Image (cartoon, rainbow, N blue to C red; front, side, top):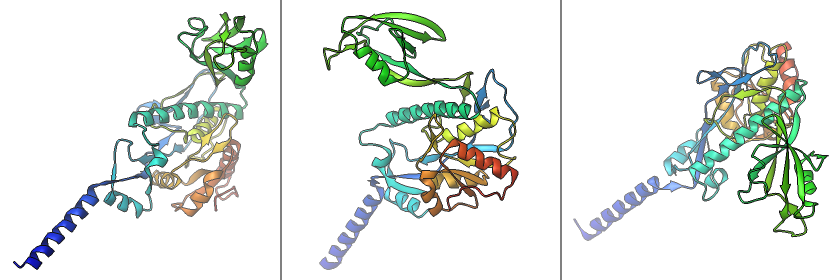
Length: 349
């Protein structure tokens, strides 16, 4: 073998080695593909997804499916070939890793964040559905945390509902903070609270605020919550996270609490966050959720108004894409389609 041949062979081997290494090295991206769908009117792992106690419910028909996206785990990495294959798959997407997992976030932290978002989504969907169905839902201020070395330690508890401060009714978190901070530091503040449904009066000696010694504080942080007129259980657990099932939960609860089936026996799917007032918010992964819904047999997909442009640019897989900005929009559209499958409703086209 000549020197030239040896050099070319060595160079070729080096190129092949470098290419192989490049193929194995992770890239700063994650893949998104269709995840499982769940019928919120049905069962999950042997239990009803939604259970309503102490209230009249009505028979339902068909399915209302929440849709999910399967994303590369926070503790996993995507190789160049994997990213390349996903990029050319119409049902998948490749997005920068930092958009899904902020720098430094662990897999456990990501899971916890998604669980908190799901829990919040369940609560706001319940409030929105019950309000739409004609029930009274009360917004309340709750104790979110109690400082272990603060004035309220041993007196107030997490989840206490704050009813009044020195006899003045509490109407919101900012107003409650003002009622406390405007007192003279060191003064005794009388708090009326509701704990486990029972009224209690608690007296707390305030202290100076570290940020402003002229203002009082009692060593708690406050949060917002709602009180429902009857118990609702969501048995989906933590297997699915994030806020995007809110609209589907609200539609399903409304369907259970009102006469007549929204779906007319069909399989409906959708996505979208929801607040207690019933406003539907945009979410991520619409393309993958559309594909997952189609695979589950859905004929209609409820799309948040903020996602309609993206959905219209994707494959609709033969489904009707209904544009919704509020829970009321979604209910009205489904009622029209139940009466007449060819009815005119807002769409994403």
